[in-house]
Image (cartoon, rainbow, N blue to C red; front, side):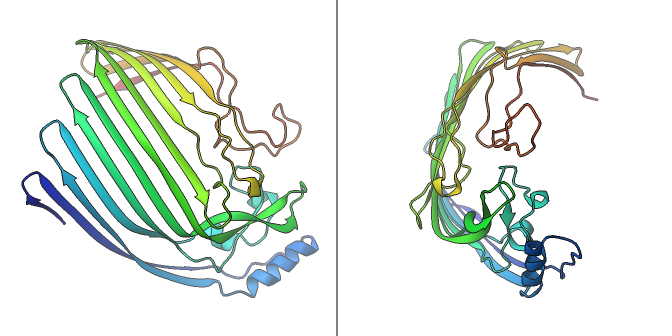
Length: 317
């Protein structure tokens, strides 16, 4: 429902109901070590048919004092049911890891849905030559689902992580965006995003939270030629989950160059070089290598792409 309640003020409200039923049959593994057979017996002895139902709701107020400025404040109640992996991953084998973080996981059929309250604010300004947007948010999540170490060890000697409901978690951060027209053809743009996550049950940081990241670009565009010089940045991430033995990652900066030309009115050809200086880096959310005999040490994050060249063509008809 969207309604202009008074001049310059708009109210948006919505509600959505969801109903979800999941089930898993009994597993059958005739071959395997004793722990796997024990997992099979334990899993088959649980109630594997689950039904969840909930209602989500959103309310937002938008204030538009003039054509250049807009402010919006929103509150939402949202819920999320456990995924099939989180609920039905019945034995912690390497083949069922699946999270790309170098760890081995075990599911829990008795997980409860997550329930969160989100508050978000947004301010945007659009002038003749420049734009700006600022969007902070806060989220409190009850029954937050996260892998936690148990006494059982995986084949690499590290604790198995079993999905379970944390009492409460908090996530908060902001997104920034700005652009400035230097001239008719030149534009400077920048974006940045930051998020923090805390487990309020243990006081630890949440697992696999990205660091502060940003993108700055200088663009020339005359409708025939387009040149882009782009800088991509990520800060060091040392706010990691100690209870999951999460490793820190170093910050990095990359330079990308792109050139595009319109050939007629329908064909656009673009060439580019990414990571111009051949920087070695790893994204904090990259997968972790668990395969021996490769150039990447077991336990290290998969490195980012080194210097690369590309060309593409886009034909509109």
